[in-house]
Length: 458
Image 1 (cartoon, rainbow, N blue to C red):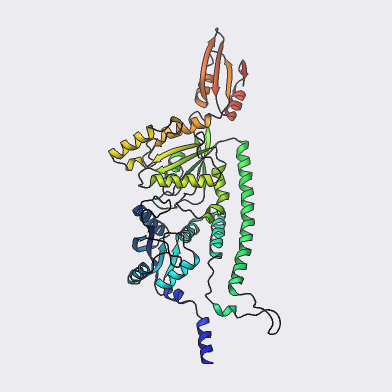
Image 2: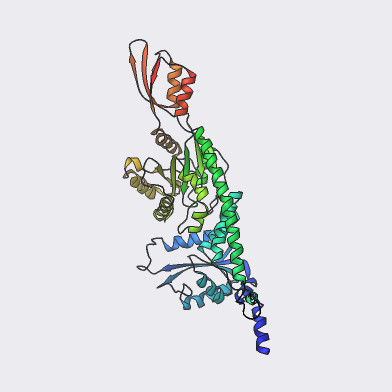
C-alpha cells in the first residue's frame, strides 16, 4: 500500500519544473541564441551579433529584464534538447546564478525540446514563436487584433499540452470493469481549445466580410491605397506620421505597431490617397501569425501601391529585405512588379559620410524603375521625393484626357496643372487650346462639373 500511496502523491502535484519556475523571478530573462557553426547553417545568412541584439530587443519589447544574453554555437541540432548536453549544463549554472525565471531560446523548439530544457534549467522556456505571440498579445488593442492573436496562440498551445495533473487521467468510461479509459485531461483541454478556435474563426470571418465592405465603400470614392510594409522597427510608423501628420505610436521598439492604421494623405496634383501603416514583419515569422493576421494583411494585398521601408543603417538590412519580400510572396504579391512596389531606404541620417556615399552609389546603379529612395523619416530628408514618386506611380494608371479650352481660360488651365499631369498643350488658331492631361477619374469628373469645355475626348 505504501508504494501506491507514494505514487498518488506524486500524481497530484504539478511537474517539478513548474514548481521550480515559480520560485524564481519571472521578470528576469536569460536570452540564448543558438547558431549553427559556419558551413552548417541552412541558408541563414544573418550576422550572429545582429541576431543577438534582435533577440534582446524582443525580450525588452515585452518588458522583461534581460539578465544574461549570449550566442551558443552548435555543431548539430540535438533532437532532445536542440542544444548539446554540455552546453545545457553550463547554461543551467548561469540561469541559477542570475535567478532567471524565464529563458528565451531564439529558435523554433519542438514541444519535447521545450519540455526537456525546462526540466534541465528549472525555468520557463519560451521559443521564438512563443515570445512573438506574447508580444502580439500584449500589443493588440482592437477586438480584431485580439482575436487574431488568440487564434494563433491557441493553435500554438494545442500541440504543447503537457501532463501536469496526471491523476485526472484515472477516469474510465463504459460500465463495470470492461469500459475503456475515459476522456483524459489533455483530451478535455484539446477539445476546449478546438471549440474556442472554431468560435474565433467564425468571428474573424465576420471581420473579414466587414473589411471587404469597407474596401468596396472606398472604391466608390476611388482613392488609391498605399500600404507601408517593412521589417519591424524599420521606421514605418515614423514615416506614416511624417506623411499624414498623424500621431501613431512610433518608438525604437520591436512591434511598436500591431493594429493597422489608415489615414488620408494629399499628393502633388491635388490627388488624395489612403496611407496604411501595417504590422512589421520579422525573420522566421510564425506561420500561425501569418495565417491569423491574413484578414489584416489583406489591406496590403488589396493596396494599389506598396512602399517597402528598409532600415538602411542596420547591419542585416539585406537579410531583412529578403524576409519581407518572402512574406509578400506568401501573400500572393508579385515582388518584381515595379509598378506596384517602391523601395525606400530609411534612417540615412544614421550613416556616416562613407556609408552614405556607398548607399547612394548602390542606389544609382539600380534600374531607374526600381531605384530606391534614400530618406530619413525622422528629419524629413527625401520625403518630398518619395511623395512625388508615389504620385507618379499612381498616375501611371490614370486615363489620358484630351481637352479643348479657350486660350484665355487661364483659371481652368491652372486647375489642370494643379490636379493632374499636363502632358502637352498646343495652340490651334486664336480660339483653341488643345490640352492632353493625365488625371484621376474623380478629378476628371470634378473638372467636367467645374466647366464645360468647347470639346473633349477620352
